[in-house]
Amino acid sequence: MAKTVMYLLATLVVSLLLDSIVRPRPVRGRRGVGALLHVLVMTFAFGVFLTLAGNAAVSAVLACALMAVFTVASNAKYKMLGEPLVFSDLALLAAVVRHPRFYFTAISARQRVLMALGAVAALVALLFLISLDASPHLTGAVILLAASGGLWLALRSGWVGGVMRVPDLEGDLQRYGLVATLLVYWRRWRETADPPACLPSAATAPAPPEVIVIVQCESFADPVEIGGDASLALPGLTRARGDAWQHGDLAVSGFGAYTMRTEYGVLFGRSEAELGFRRYDPFLTAHGETTLALSARLDGAGYRGIFVHPHDLGFYGRDRLMPAIGFEQVIGEDGFAPVPPDAGRYVDDRTLGAKLGELVAAARGPTLLYAVTMENHGPWDAGRVPGSPGGLDAYLQHARSSDAMLTGLIERLGADGRPALLVFFGDHRPSIPGVSMPGGARHTPYVMMRFAAGGVPVSGAGRVDLTPDELHHTILRCVQ
Image (cartoon, rainbow, N blue to C red; front, side):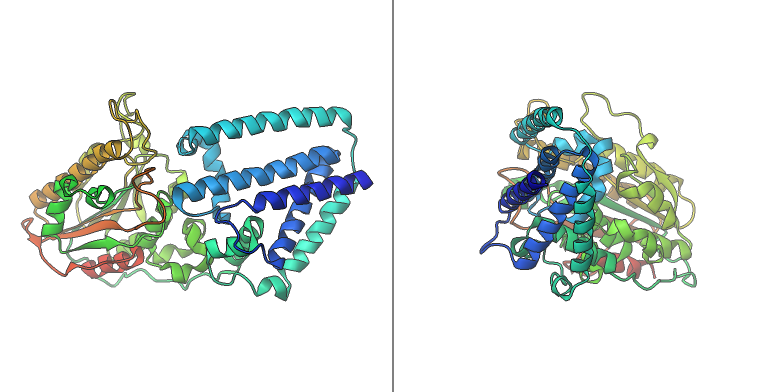
């Protein structure tokens, strides 16, 4: 028993030291409630491993290794995206297992080497410790039950109930630590009430535009703002702004990732203030909000919805969510030819634009097309584009492809002749080391073009800066 207590204390000390290096670093140490929750959670983890392994040393190594993984992951995310680990990131674990390359290529080579060395060292240590003593240890069950009871009481106490009531991820992490913030934010997320239902506008007669094309462009930003050079201006974006009914900056919350936050805002029209702790991954609760969706409301107004995303629709559960919110047809990566080995990782935007043009030509009656692109997904390493050193040069080549798609859609809708609406926006800025970094501006461009009968662009409000949820409501006003 004394040896078990010693290993438990060692686990708590090491885990607290690891917590102290999580970025952003604490200014004056952690607050008491944060330390309490950290101790209870790590005791719980130690109890789980001790119950399963029956070896106190093994349990200590596993618990500390788990804390080390969270620390490294949070710091890597903070360096790349300007945001520490949050509870909703744990929902992506299945996606990491299914598509490891999609995530691990975003981690630097140095970090991958350190993770591999750490895994090997932990494995060797575990094999050695298990060889010393692998007998069952019922003490683990007692520790597990005690820690569970302590956590249950703490989470229901006024002491914990009075903290972290409003989302402030960086500030709360500095005050309370990573473990406590993960736990309490999850708790607040569970406590968030569902929004009131919004009935589709079934009584609204279909009205111009007859065709609505909305393109959510992956990592699309204005190269002039990123590179600081006017010569980098994209001709399609410049033309669209000149002919736009409305255009401006889209105030997205994510940087370098979190497509689903912008996507949710545009599709569901709820602000982050309304979402509260659901803001970090609103797709996790979107199935309870289907009547709020733009596609559901337009479906009630007579529009046929088509969702297009040339990638795995299992990401964020789009394969189940999109049909549930009114999209009659959902087209994934199987709707496109396989990407040739020398053509990059993802379906390029020109190919996607051609597909959207075909769908516009085939549309009969009021139609909503919502597309999510993939070509611009990072990282922007050297060698991504043959002959390119990576970084801004690689990004620009793909951004020009997105711009060509925008130009093609403008010409397609102009030639179509039916009243139409084209909405094009970036979901977040790219994370390019040394060029586009966390801590700076986050906005992306958006343009809305309205075409009258005959394909003539219609001028309107001019420049208006919006948030994604405001863009949702602006689109609805164009239809009603």
